[in-house]
Length: 608
Image (tube, rainbow, N blue to C red; front, side):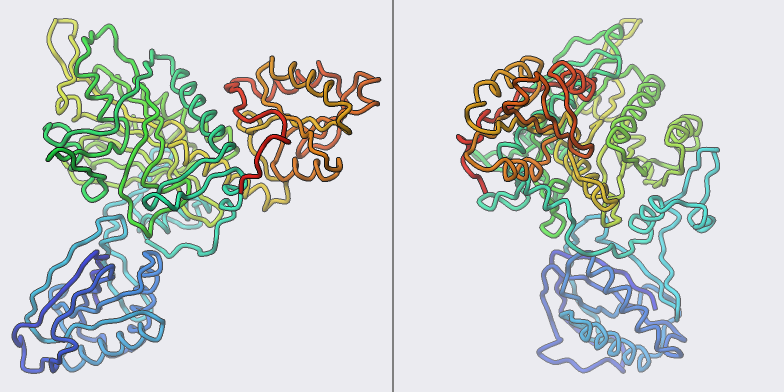
Protein backbone atom coordinates (compact mmCIF):
# COMPACT_ATOMS: atom_id res chain seq x y z
CA UNK A 1 0.00 0.00 0.00
CA UNK A 2 1.27 3.45 -0.86
CA UNK A 3 0.07 6.60 0.84
CA UNK A 4 0.48 10.30 0.11
CA UNK A 5 -0.61 12.35 3.13
CA UNK A 6 -1.49 16.04 2.86
CA UNK A 7 -2.55 18.21 5.78
CA UNK A 8 -5.12 20.43 4.08
CA UNK A 9 -6.73 23.63 5.21
CA UNK A 10 -9.52 22.76 2.75
CA UNK A 11 -10.29 19.73 0.58
CA UNK A 12 -13.29 19.04 -1.61
CA UNK A 13 -14.15 16.49 -4.27
CA UNK A 14 -17.03 15.54 -6.54
CA UNK A 15 -17.42 12.21 -8.34
CA UNK A 16 -18.13 12.82 -12.06
CA UNK A 17 -18.14 9.53 -14.03
CA UNK A 18 -17.16 5.90 -13.67
CA UNK A 19 -13.52 5.02 -14.35
CA UNK A 20 -14.04 1.23 -14.16
CA UNK A 21 -17.01 -1.16 -14.30
CA UNK A 22 -16.45 -2.32 -10.73
CA UNK A 23 -16.80 1.22 -9.32
CA UNK A 24 -18.54 1.55 -5.96
CA UNK A 25 -22.09 2.84 -5.88
CA UNK A 26 -22.65 6.52 -5.37
CA UNK A 27 -24.95 8.03 -2.76
CA UNK A 28 -25.81 11.55 -1.73
CA UNK A 29 -23.44 10.98 1.19
CA UNK A 30 -20.30 10.06 -0.76
CA UNK A 31 -20.84 11.74 -4.14
CA UNK A 32 -19.20 14.97 -3.01
CA UNK A 33 -17.67 16.37 0.14
CA UNK A 34 -16.07 19.55 1.42
CA UNK A 35 -13.82 19.31 4.50
CA UNK A 36 -11.63 21.69 6.52
CA UNK A 37 -8.49 21.04 8.59
CA UNK A 38 -8.31 17.49 7.30
CA UNK A 39 -5.61 14.89 6.74
CA UNK A 40 -6.05 13.74 3.14
CA UNK A 41 -4.78 10.17 2.69
CA UNK A 42 -4.30 9.47 -1.02
CA UNK A 43 -4.22 5.67 -1.05
CA UNK A 44 -3.04 3.16 -3.64
CA UNK A 45 -3.71 -0.51 -2.95
CA UNK A 46 -1.12 -2.70 -4.62
CA UNK A 47 -1.13 -6.30 -5.72
CA UNK A 48 -0.42 -8.77 -2.91
CA UNK A 49 -1.62 -6.27 -0.27
CA UNK A 50 -4.62 -8.50 0.41
CA UNK A 51 -2.46 -11.49 1.34
CA UNK A 52 -1.81 -10.14 4.82
CA UNK A 53 -4.45 -7.89 6.37
CA UNK A 54 -1.96 -6.74 9.04
CA UNK A 55 -1.17 -4.13 6.40
CA UNK A 56 -4.38 -2.32 7.40
CA UNK A 57 -3.23 -2.10 11.02
CA UNK A 58 0.22 -0.88 9.94
CA UNK A 59 -1.30 1.78 7.69
CA UNK A 60 -3.81 2.89 10.34
CA UNK A 61 -1.10 3.15 12.98
CA UNK A 62 1.01 5.35 10.74
CA UNK A 63 -1.89 7.63 9.78
CA UNK A 64 -2.96 7.95 13.43
CA UNK A 65 0.57 8.90 14.50
CA UNK A 66 0.65 11.67 11.91
CA UNK A 67 -2.89 12.87 12.67
CA UNK A 68 -2.07 13.16 16.36
CA UNK A 69 1.07 15.14 15.67
CA UNK A 70 -1.06 17.53 13.63
CA UNK A 71 -3.90 17.58 16.21
CA UNK A 72 -6.26 16.62 13.38
CA UNK A 73 -9.49 14.70 13.96
CA UNK A 74 -10.78 14.71 10.36
CA UNK A 75 -9.38 12.16 7.89
CA UNK A 76 -10.40 11.41 4.32
CA UNK A 77 -9.29 8.24 2.53
CA UNK A 78 -9.03 9.08 -1.15
CA UNK A 79 -8.47 6.15 -3.57
CA UNK A 80 -5.64 7.19 -5.85
CA UNK A 81 -4.27 4.80 -8.47
CA UNK A 82 -1.31 6.97 -9.49
CA UNK A 83 1.21 6.07 -6.77
CA UNK A 84 2.04 2.63 -8.17
CA UNK A 85 1.97 0.62 -11.42
CA UNK A 86 1.21 -2.64 -9.58
CA UNK A 87 -2.42 -2.23 -8.66
CA UNK A 88 -4.55 -4.71 -6.75
CA UNK A 89 -7.76 -6.06 -8.25
CA UNK A 90 -10.64 -3.63 -7.70
CA UNK A 91 -12.53 -6.07 -5.45
CA UNK A 92 -9.45 -6.53 -3.25
CA UNK A 93 -8.72 -2.80 -3.15
CA UNK A 94 -12.27 -1.94 -2.09
CA UNK A 95 -12.15 -4.52 0.69
CA UNK A 96 -8.87 -3.13 2.06
CA UNK A 97 -10.06 0.47 1.83
CA UNK A 98 -13.24 -0.36 3.73
CA UNK A 99 -11.21 -2.12 6.44
CA UNK A 100 -8.85 0.86 6.56
CA UNK A 101 -11.83 3.19 7.06
CA UNK A 102 -13.34 1.03 9.81
CA UNK A 103 -10.03 0.77 11.65
CA UNK A 104 -9.54 4.54 11.74
CA UNK A 105 -13.12 5.11 12.89
CA UNK A 106 -12.64 2.68 15.77
CA UNK A 107 -9.62 4.69 16.82
CA UNK A 108 -11.84 7.74 17.30
CA UNK A 109 -11.39 9.76 14.12
CA UNK A 110 -13.98 11.38 11.86
CA UNK A 111 -13.33 9.41 8.69
CA UNK A 112 -14.65 10.02 5.18
CA UNK A 113 -13.88 7.69 2.29
CA UNK A 114 -14.23 8.86 -1.30
CA UNK A 115 -15.81 6.30 -3.66
CA UNK A 116 -13.50 3.88 -5.46
CA UNK A 117 -13.42 3.66 -9.25
CA UNK A 118 -14.66 7.14 -10.23
CA UNK A 119 -13.14 10.07 -12.05
CA UNK A 120 -13.36 12.87 -9.53
CA UNK A 121 -12.79 16.59 -9.51
CA UNK A 122 -10.94 17.71 -6.39
CA UNK A 123 -9.47 20.89 -4.94
CA UNK A 124 -6.91 21.01 -2.14
CA UNK A 125 -5.34 23.82 -0.12
CA UNK A 126 -2.27 22.55 1.72
CA UNK A 127 -1.14 24.24 4.95
CA UNK A 128 2.52 24.12 3.93
CA UNK A 129 4.23 23.39 7.25
CA UNK A 130 6.99 20.72 7.63
CA UNK A 131 4.54 17.87 8.30
CA UNK A 132 2.00 18.93 5.68
CA UNK A 133 3.28 16.63 2.91
CA UNK A 134 4.43 13.09 3.69
CA UNK A 135 4.59 9.79 1.86
CA UNK A 136 4.62 6.25 3.16
CA UNK A 137 4.98 2.78 1.66
CA UNK A 138 3.32 0.13 3.82
CA UNK A 139 4.36 -3.52 3.74
CA UNK A 140 3.09 -6.17 6.17
CA UNK A 141 5.10 -5.59 9.35
CA UNK A 142 7.12 -2.79 7.77
CA UNK A 143 6.75 0.91 7.00
CA UNK A 144 9.08 2.40 4.41
CA UNK A 145 9.41 6.16 4.71
CA UNK A 146 10.54 7.78 1.51
CA UNK A 147 12.53 10.97 1.19
CA UNK A 148 15.71 9.89 3.00
CA UNK A 149 17.80 11.03 0.06
CA UNK A 150 17.21 14.57 1.35
CA UNK A 151 19.22 13.86 4.50
CA UNK A 152 22.73 12.84 5.53
CA UNK A 153 24.76 12.88 8.72
CA UNK A 154 28.11 14.68 8.92
CA UNK A 155 30.56 13.50 11.60
CA UNK A 156 33.42 15.52 13.19
CA UNK A 157 35.97 13.23 11.50
CA UNK A 158 34.67 14.35 8.08
CA UNK A 159 32.66 11.20 7.36
CA UNK A 160 29.27 11.70 5.68
CA UNK A 161 26.70 8.88 5.88
CA UNK A 162 23.24 8.47 4.41
CA UNK A 163 20.37 7.73 6.79
CA UNK A 164 20.33 4.10 5.65
CA UNK A 165 24.04 3.72 6.48
CA UNK A 166 23.70 4.95 10.07
CA UNK A 167 24.34 2.67 13.03
CA UNK A 168 21.71 3.77 15.60
CA UNK A 169 23.86 2.40 18.43
CA UNK A 170 26.57 4.94 17.60
CA UNK A 171 24.25 7.93 18.20
CA UNK A 172 23.46 9.64 21.49
CA UNK A 173 19.89 10.07 22.69
CA UNK A 174 19.69 13.75 21.73
CA UNK A 175 20.63 13.05 18.13
CA UNK A 176 18.25 10.09 17.98
CA UNK A 177 15.43 12.39 19.12
CA UNK A 178 16.33 14.83 16.35
CA UNK A 179 16.28 12.09 13.70
CA UNK A 180 12.99 10.69 14.94
CA UNK A 181 11.31 14.07 14.71
CA UNK A 182 12.90 15.57 11.60
CA UNK A 183 13.57 12.55 9.40
CA UNK A 184 11.24 9.77 10.51
CA UNK A 185 8.40 12.12 11.58
CA UNK A 186 7.78 9.93 14.61
CA UNK A 187 4.96 10.92 16.96
CA UNK A 188 6.33 12.82 19.92
CA UNK A 189 5.73 12.17 23.58
CA UNK A 190 2.50 13.69 24.84
CA UNK A 191 1.72 15.37 28.13
CA UNK A 192 1.69 18.88 29.54
CA UNK A 193 5.22 20.28 29.74
CA UNK A 194 6.31 21.37 33.21
CA UNK A 195 7.82 24.64 32.00
CA UNK A 196 4.30 26.08 31.60
CA UNK A 197 3.96 26.08 35.38
CA UNK A 198 7.18 28.08 35.61
CA UNK A 199 5.97 30.51 32.94
CA UNK A 200 2.94 31.29 35.06
CA UNK A 201 5.15 31.81 38.13
CA UNK A 202 6.94 34.70 36.44
CA UNK A 203 4.03 36.15 34.44
CA UNK A 204 4.56 34.75 30.92
CA UNK A 205 1.03 34.13 29.63
CA UNK A 206 -1.18 34.14 26.55
CA UNK A 207 -3.18 37.31 26.00
CA UNK A 208 -6.76 36.08 25.56
CA UNK A 209 -8.02 39.46 24.33
CA UNK A 210 -5.66 39.51 21.33
CA UNK A 211 -5.20 37.25 18.34
CA UNK A 212 -4.03 33.70 18.96
CA UNK A 213 -0.31 33.36 19.60
CA UNK A 214 0.18 36.72 21.31
CA UNK A 215 1.69 36.89 24.78
CA UNK A 216 1.58 39.28 27.68
CA UNK A 217 4.41 39.85 30.14
CA UNK A 218 3.70 40.63 33.80
CA UNK A 219 6.02 42.83 35.89
CA UNK A 220 8.61 40.10 36.52
CA UNK A 221 8.37 38.70 32.98
CA UNK A 222 8.81 42.20 31.51
CA UNK A 223 11.93 42.70 33.62
CA UNK A 224 13.32 39.34 32.49
CA UNK A 225 12.69 40.32 28.87
CA UNK A 226 14.54 43.64 29.37
CA UNK A 227 17.52 41.82 30.87
CA UNK A 228 17.68 39.30 28.02
CA UNK A 229 17.38 42.08 25.44
CA UNK A 230 20.41 43.83 26.95
CA UNK A 231 22.29 40.55 27.08
CA UNK A 232 21.51 39.86 23.41
CA UNK A 233 23.06 43.24 22.54
CA UNK A 234 26.09 42.39 24.71
CA UNK A 235 26.49 39.06 22.87
CA UNK A 236 26.35 40.80 19.50
CA UNK A 237 29.05 43.24 20.57
CA UNK A 238 31.31 40.41 21.76
CA UNK A 239 32.04 39.12 18.23
CA UNK A 240 34.91 41.55 17.74
CA UNK A 241 33.37 43.61 14.93
CA UNK A 242 31.63 47.02 14.99
CA UNK A 243 27.88 46.68 15.62
CA UNK A 244 25.29 49.41 15.18
CA UNK A 245 21.98 49.33 17.06
CA UNK A 246 19.01 50.69 15.12
CA UNK A 247 15.23 50.92 15.54
CA UNK A 248 12.44 51.07 13.00
CA UNK A 249 8.94 50.25 11.92
CA UNK A 250 7.27 46.88 11.69
CA UNK A 251 5.03 47.76 8.72
CA UNK A 252 6.22 47.50 5.10
CA UNK A 253 4.46 48.27 1.86
CA UNK A 254 4.08 45.38 -0.60
CA UNK A 255 4.20 47.84 -3.51
CA UNK A 256 7.98 47.87 -3.12
CA UNK A 257 9.46 45.05 -5.18
CA UNK A 258 12.17 43.88 -2.71
CA UNK A 259 9.63 43.83 0.13
CA UNK A 260 7.22 41.78 -1.98
CA UNK A 261 9.91 39.36 -3.18
CA UNK A 262 11.26 38.78 0.31
CA UNK A 263 7.75 38.43 1.73
CA UNK A 264 6.78 35.80 -0.82
CA UNK A 265 9.24 33.40 0.82
CA UNK A 266 6.95 33.25 3.86
CA UNK A 267 3.68 32.53 2.04
CA UNK A 268 0.78 31.86 4.38
CA UNK A 269 2.82 32.89 7.43
CA UNK A 270 2.51 36.58 6.58
CA UNK A 271 0.52 39.01 8.68
CA UNK A 272 -1.03 41.53 6.30
CA UNK A 273 -3.01 44.69 6.92
CA UNK A 274 -4.82 46.97 4.49
CA UNK A 275 -4.76 50.76 4.92
CA UNK A 276 -5.75 53.47 2.42
CA UNK A 277 -6.22 50.86 -0.31
CA UNK A 278 -2.64 49.65 0.16
CA UNK A 279 -1.38 46.30 1.43
CA UNK A 280 1.25 46.11 4.13
CA UNK A 281 2.99 43.24 5.86
CA UNK A 282 4.04 43.11 9.47
CA UNK A 283 7.70 42.12 9.47
CA UNK A 284 8.65 38.61 10.56
CA UNK A 285 12.21 39.63 11.60
CA UNK A 286 14.42 42.73 11.47
CA UNK A 287 15.44 42.07 7.86
CA UNK A 288 13.08 44.55 6.19
CA UNK A 289 13.98 47.52 8.38
CA UNK A 290 17.71 46.88 8.44
CA UNK A 291 17.91 46.26 4.68
CA UNK A 292 15.76 49.31 3.91
CA UNK A 293 18.16 51.38 6.00
CA UNK A 294 21.41 49.82 4.75
CA UNK A 295 20.58 50.57 1.12
CA UNK A 296 20.92 54.28 2.01
CA UNK A 297 24.31 53.97 3.71
CA UNK A 298 27.59 54.83 1.98
CA UNK A 299 29.69 51.74 2.72
CA UNK A 300 33.34 51.19 1.90
CA UNK A 301 35.22 47.91 1.88
CA UNK A 302 37.19 49.46 4.77
CA UNK A 303 34.03 49.37 6.89
CA UNK A 304 33.48 45.65 6.42
CA UNK A 305 32.68 43.50 8.24
CA UNK A 306 30.18 45.22 10.54
CA UNK A 307 26.86 44.33 12.14
CA UNK A 308 23.45 45.94 12.47
CA UNK A 309 21.30 44.98 15.46
CA UNK A 310 17.68 45.47 16.49
CA UNK A 311 15.27 43.89 18.94
CA UNK A 312 12.55 43.46 16.32
CA UNK A 313 8.93 42.89 17.21
CA UNK A 314 8.17 40.16 14.69
CA UNK A 315 4.96 38.65 13.37
CA UNK A 316 4.38 35.22 11.83
CA UNK A 317 0.95 33.78 11.16
CA UNK A 318 1.66 30.34 12.60
CA UNK A 319 -1.03 27.66 12.46
CA UNK A 320 -3.25 27.55 15.58
CA UNK A 321 -2.36 23.94 16.36
CA UNK A 322 1.37 24.75 16.31
CA UNK A 323 1.32 27.62 18.82
CA UNK A 324 3.41 27.00 21.94
CA UNK A 325 3.81 29.51 24.79
CA UNK A 326 7.24 31.16 24.70
CA UNK A 327 8.25 29.03 21.71
CA UNK A 328 6.03 29.25 18.64
CA UNK A 329 4.19 32.56 18.57
CA UNK A 330 2.49 34.90 16.18
CA UNK A 331 4.17 37.91 17.77
CA UNK A 332 7.57 37.81 19.43
CA UNK A 333 10.81 39.75 19.95
CA UNK A 334 13.80 38.81 17.80
CA UNK A 335 17.29 40.14 18.69
CA UNK A 336 18.28 40.16 15.04
CA UNK A 337 21.89 40.69 14.00
CA UNK A 338 22.92 41.10 10.36
CA UNK A 339 26.63 41.12 9.54
CA UNK A 340 27.78 42.57 6.22
CA UNK A 341 30.83 40.87 4.68
CA UNK A 342 32.83 41.58 1.52
CA UNK A 343 32.34 38.14 0.05
CA UNK A 344 31.52 34.53 0.81
CA UNK A 345 35.02 33.74 2.09
CA UNK A 346 34.87 36.54 4.66
CA UNK A 347 31.33 35.46 5.61
CA UNK A 348 32.57 31.91 6.22
CA UNK A 349 35.28 33.18 8.58
CA UNK A 350 32.84 35.34 10.53
CA UNK A 351 30.35 32.46 10.60
CA UNK A 352 32.85 30.36 12.54
CA UNK A 353 32.84 33.05 15.26
CA UNK A 354 29.05 33.23 15.17
CA UNK A 355 28.81 29.45 15.43
CA UNK A 356 31.18 29.35 18.40
CA UNK A 357 29.24 32.14 20.15
CA UNK A 358 25.90 30.39 19.67
CA UNK A 359 27.33 27.26 21.28
CA UNK A 360 29.04 29.21 24.05
CA UNK A 361 25.73 30.79 25.08
CA UNK A 362 23.67 27.61 25.25
CA UNK A 363 26.45 25.84 27.16
CA UNK A 364 26.41 28.63 29.74
CA UNK A 365 22.89 27.41 30.56
CA UNK A 366 24.19 23.87 31.00
CA UNK A 367 22.61 22.68 27.75
CA UNK A 368 23.84 21.60 24.33
CA UNK A 369 22.48 21.75 20.81
CA UNK A 370 21.88 19.20 18.10
CA UNK A 371 21.98 20.94 14.76
CA UNK A 372 20.37 20.81 11.35
CA UNK A 373 22.48 22.20 8.49
CA UNK A 374 20.26 23.16 5.55
CA UNK A 375 22.17 23.52 2.27
CA UNK A 376 22.35 22.33 -1.31
CA UNK A 377 24.43 19.31 -2.26
CA UNK A 378 26.65 21.51 -4.40
CA UNK A 379 27.40 23.84 -1.47
CA UNK A 380 28.50 20.87 0.62
CA UNK A 381 30.68 19.54 -2.20
CA UNK A 382 32.34 22.93 -2.77
CA UNK A 383 32.68 23.93 0.89
CA UNK A 384 33.27 20.68 2.72
CA UNK A 385 36.27 22.04 4.65
CA UNK A 386 34.16 24.93 5.97
CA UNK A 387 31.35 22.58 7.03
CA UNK A 388 33.89 20.33 8.72
CA UNK A 389 35.22 23.28 10.73
CA UNK A 390 31.69 23.98 11.97
CA UNK A 391 31.02 20.33 12.83
CA UNK A 392 34.33 19.93 14.66
CA UNK A 393 33.31 22.72 17.02
CA UNK A 394 30.09 20.85 17.78
CA UNK A 395 32.12 17.74 18.70
CA UNK A 396 29.30 15.48 17.56
CA UNK A 397 27.40 14.62 14.35
CA UNK A 398 25.01 17.04 12.68
CA UNK A 399 22.01 16.38 10.45
CA UNK A 400 22.42 17.66 6.90
CA UNK A 401 19.19 18.55 5.10
CA UNK A 402 19.67 19.01 1.38
CA UNK A 403 17.49 21.69 -0.21
CA UNK A 404 16.83 22.26 -3.94
CA UNK A 405 19.42 24.19 -5.95
CA UNK A 406 18.62 27.85 -6.53
CA UNK A 407 15.48 27.97 -4.38
CA UNK A 408 16.68 30.03 -1.42
CA UNK A 409 18.49 33.34 -0.98
CA UNK A 410 20.90 31.68 1.48
CA UNK A 411 23.59 29.07 0.88
CA UNK A 412 23.56 27.60 4.38
CA UNK A 413 21.02 27.86 7.18
CA UNK A 414 21.75 26.23 10.55
CA UNK A 415 19.03 25.45 13.09
CA UNK A 416 20.31 24.86 16.63
CA UNK A 417 17.95 22.62 18.64
CA UNK A 418 17.79 21.71 22.28
CA UNK A 419 15.94 18.50 23.16
CA UNK A 420 13.33 19.52 25.71
CA UNK A 421 11.72 17.74 28.66
CA UNK A 422 9.28 15.91 26.37
CA UNK A 423 12.12 14.79 24.06
CA UNK A 424 11.17 17.25 21.33
CA UNK A 425 13.70 19.19 19.24
CA UNK A 426 13.22 22.92 19.81
CA UNK A 427 15.12 25.38 17.65
CA UNK A 428 16.63 28.22 19.68
CA UNK A 429 19.67 29.78 17.95
CA UNK A 430 20.11 30.20 14.20
CA UNK A 431 22.32 31.66 11.51
CA UNK A 432 22.38 31.74 7.71
CA UNK A 433 24.64 33.11 4.99
CA UNK A 434 22.56 35.26 2.62
CA UNK A 435 23.82 35.81 -0.94
CA UNK A 436 20.60 37.22 -2.42
CA UNK A 437 19.10 40.06 -0.40
CA UNK A 438 21.86 42.62 -0.89
CA UNK A 439 21.10 42.66 -4.61
CA UNK A 440 17.34 42.53 -4.02
CA UNK A 441 17.44 45.59 -1.72
CA UNK A 442 20.30 47.33 -3.62
CA UNK A 443 22.68 47.25 -0.65
CA UNK A 444 26.17 47.95 -2.02
CA UNK A 445 29.68 48.81 -0.91
CA UNK A 446 32.63 50.34 -2.80
CA UNK A 447 35.56 47.92 -3.19
CA UNK A 448 39.30 48.64 -3.46
CA UNK A 449 38.94 49.44 -7.18
CA UNK A 450 36.11 51.93 -6.62
CA UNK A 451 33.51 49.52 -8.00
CA UNK A 452 30.12 48.78 -6.51
CA UNK A 453 29.75 45.32 -5.03
CA UNK A 454 26.99 43.46 -3.21
CA UNK A 455 27.96 42.29 0.29
CA UNK A 456 27.21 38.83 1.63
CA UNK A 457 24.98 39.07 4.71
CA UNK A 458 24.99 36.80 7.75
CA UNK A 459 21.63 36.61 9.55
CA UNK A 460 21.77 35.41 13.15
CA UNK A 461 19.91 35.38 16.44
CA UNK A 462 22.75 34.29 18.72
CA UNK A 463 20.51 33.34 21.64
CA UNK A 464 17.28 32.90 19.67
CA UNK A 465 14.22 35.07 20.10
CA UNK A 466 13.84 36.53 23.61
CA UNK A 467 10.91 34.21 24.26
CA UNK A 468 12.74 31.11 23.02
CA UNK A 469 15.65 31.95 25.29
CA UNK A 470 13.16 32.05 28.18
CA UNK A 471 11.86 28.68 26.96
CA UNK A 472 15.39 27.23 27.08
CA UNK A 473 16.02 28.64 30.56
CA UNK A 474 12.76 27.33 32.01
CA UNK A 475 13.06 23.93 30.31
CA UNK A 476 16.54 23.68 31.84
CA UNK A 477 15.00 24.37 35.25
CA UNK A 478 12.55 21.53 34.61
CA UNK A 479 15.37 19.12 33.84
CA UNK A 480 17.22 20.20 36.99
CA UNK A 481 14.09 19.57 39.06
CA UNK A 482 13.77 16.09 37.53
CA UNK A 483 17.29 15.36 38.81
CA UNK A 484 16.19 16.28 42.33
CA UNK A 485 17.75 19.75 42.32
CA UNK A 486 16.02 22.99 43.15
CA UNK A 487 14.84 24.70 39.96
CA UNK A 488 16.19 28.21 39.53
CA UNK A 489 16.92 31.01 37.11
CA UNK A 490 20.49 32.06 36.40
CA UNK A 491 21.41 34.67 39.01
CA UNK A 492 21.93 37.42 36.45
CA UNK A 493 18.45 36.80 35.02
CA UNK A 494 16.49 36.60 38.29
CA UNK A 495 14.01 39.51 38.49
CA UNK A 496 14.92 39.98 42.15
CA UNK A 497 18.40 38.82 43.06
CA UNK A 498 18.34 39.57 46.78
CA UNK A 499 15.33 39.67 49.09
CA UNK A 500 15.76 41.19 52.51
CA UNK A 501 13.48 39.94 55.28
CA UNK A 502 13.53 42.09 58.45
CA UNK A 503 12.46 40.09 61.50
CA UNK A 504 10.12 42.95 62.46
CA UNK A 505 9.37 46.41 61.08
CA UNK A 506 11.73 48.03 63.63
CA UNK A 507 14.57 46.73 61.42
CA UNK A 508 13.14 48.21 58.22
CA UNK A 509 15.41 51.27 58.26
CA UNK A 510 18.55 49.13 58.50
CA UNK A 511 17.15 46.85 55.79
CA UNK A 512 16.74 49.87 53.51
CA UNK A 513 20.34 50.91 54.22
CA UNK A 514 21.57 47.45 53.13
CA UNK A 515 19.30 47.54 50.07
CA UNK A 516 20.69 50.96 49.08
CA UNK A 517 24.25 49.64 49.12
CA UNK A 518 23.34 46.55 47.08
CA UNK A 519 21.46 48.67 44.53
CA UNK A 520 24.43 51.06 44.25
CA UNK A 521 26.44 48.05 43.09
CA UNK A 522 23.84 47.23 40.44
CA UNK A 523 21.90 44.41 42.10
CA UNK A 524 18.13 44.04 42.13
CA UNK A 525 16.83 44.04 45.69
CA UNK A 526 13.49 44.13 47.42
CA UNK A 527 12.30 44.04 51.03
CA UNK A 528 9.48 41.87 52.34
CA UNK A 529 8.03 44.33 54.85
CA UNK A 530 4.66 42.61 55.10
CA UNK A 531 3.23 41.83 58.52
CA UNK A 532 3.59 38.09 58.04
CA UNK A 533 5.62 35.53 59.92
CA UNK A 534 9.25 35.10 58.92
CA UNK A 535 8.50 31.48 57.95
CA UNK A 536 5.74 32.53 55.53
CA UNK A 537 7.90 35.25 54.00
CA UNK A 538 10.71 32.76 53.51
CA UNK A 539 8.32 30.33 51.81
CA UNK A 540 7.11 33.08 49.48
CA UNK A 541 10.70 33.95 48.56
CA UNK A 542 11.43 30.28 47.86
CA UNK A 543 8.33 30.03 45.64
CA UNK A 544 9.67 32.96 43.60
CA UNK A 545 13.12 31.31 43.32
CA UNK A 546 14.85 34.30 44.97
CA UNK A 547 18.57 33.41 44.80
CA UNK A 548 19.66 35.20 48.00
CA UNK A 549 17.49 35.76 51.09
CA UNK A 550 19.01 38.06 53.70
CA UNK A 551 17.61 38.08 57.25
CA UNK A 552 18.01 41.19 59.37
CA UNK A 553 17.27 41.35 63.08
CA UNK A 554 18.89 42.38 66.32
CA UNK A 555 21.67 39.80 66.09
CA UNK A 556 22.64 40.83 62.53
CA UNK A 557 22.77 44.52 63.44
CA UNK A 558 24.84 43.97 66.57
CA UNK A 559 27.31 41.56 64.93
CA UNK A 560 27.57 43.27 61.55
CA UNK A 561 27.08 39.82 59.98
CA UNK A 562 24.16 38.96 57.73
CA UNK A 563 22.30 35.66 57.84
CA UNK A 564 22.00 34.64 54.19
CA UNK A 565 20.11 31.73 52.62
CA UNK A 566 21.44 30.88 49.15
CA UNK A 567 19.14 28.91 46.86
CA UNK A 568 20.48 25.43 46.26
CA UNK A 569 23.36 25.87 48.77
CA UNK A 570 21.99 26.56 52.23
CA UNK A 571 22.64 29.09 55.00
CA UNK A 572 25.76 31.22 55.42
CA UNK A 573 26.84 34.06 57.66
CA UNK A 574 28.48 36.84 55.63
CA UNK A 575 29.37 40.45 56.16
CA UNK A 576 28.17 42.90 53.54
CA UNK A 577 31.53 43.00 51.73
CA UNK A 578 31.64 39.21 51.46
CA UNK A 579 28.08 39.16 50.13
CA UNK A 580 28.95 41.78 47.51
CA UNK A 581 31.99 39.77 46.40
CA UNK A 582 29.80 36.70 45.85
CA UNK A 583 27.22 38.68 43.91
CA UNK A 584 29.90 40.29 41.73
CA UNK A 585 31.31 36.86 40.83
CA UNK A 586 27.85 35.64 39.83
CA UNK A 587 27.20 38.59 37.52
CA UNK A 588 30.64 38.73 35.89
CA UNK A 589 30.23 39.11 32.10
CA UNK A 590 26.46 39.63 32.42
CA UNK A 591 24.46 42.87 32.29
CA UNK A 592 23.29 44.67 35.41
CA UNK A 593 19.78 46.02 34.87
CA UNK A 594 17.96 47.99 37.55
CA UNK A 595 14.79 46.57 39.03
CA UNK A 596 11.51 47.95 37.73
CA UNK A 597 9.60 46.57 40.74
CA UNK A 598 8.78 48.61 43.83
CA UNK A 599 11.25 47.82 46.59
CA UNK A 600 8.65 47.16 49.29
CA UNK A 601 6.42 44.13 48.83
CA UNK A 602 3.67 45.75 50.89
CA UNK A 603 2.89 48.22 48.08
CA UNK A 604 2.63 45.61 45.32
CA UNK A 605 -0.81 44.36 44.24
CA UNK A 606 -1.35 40.63 44.30
CA UNK A 607 -1.32 40.06 40.54
CA UNK A 608 -2.73 36.69 39.53
